[in-house]
Image (cartoon, helix red, strand yellow):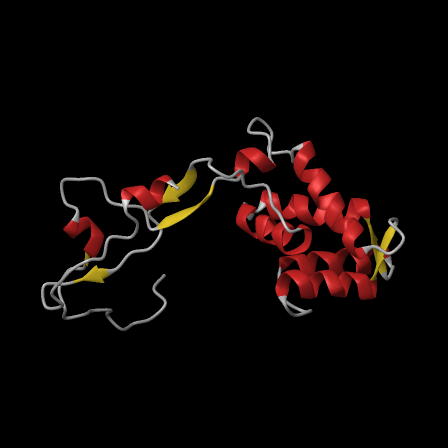
Length: 178
């Protein structure tokens, strides 16, 4: 059923992807070049976290837990400030608050903390987990020198009335090889 009775129409003509136009007949360059993390974080056959990742998550827990057994609510807030720069936003915040509320407690244990990061991984947030590890542990799971994950993620559209003037090379082959 239509959401509106108005006809949706624009007068600019058909839209074309600028990079597809510029690179017609050759491979379009990637617009997303980031560390390839999934193999370092999860097993490909079942998506379960690797022992190395769980060790890094445990290390992060230990950085904020004063007794090594629990993260008190103030310690959870310190962790959230470190990763999100503010308490009250982010999926980690929502997961942590839900776990404390459901358990009727004002703290997280290591298993709770690990569950937060298991959920992040199940949602495909590898780069978010990498950010958190780097922000808290000083290093993540990315291996220097390993090939990056690349994909075409961003699109810029033009029409015949909005003439395509040029496109900028995103990364040179030398930069992509780093």
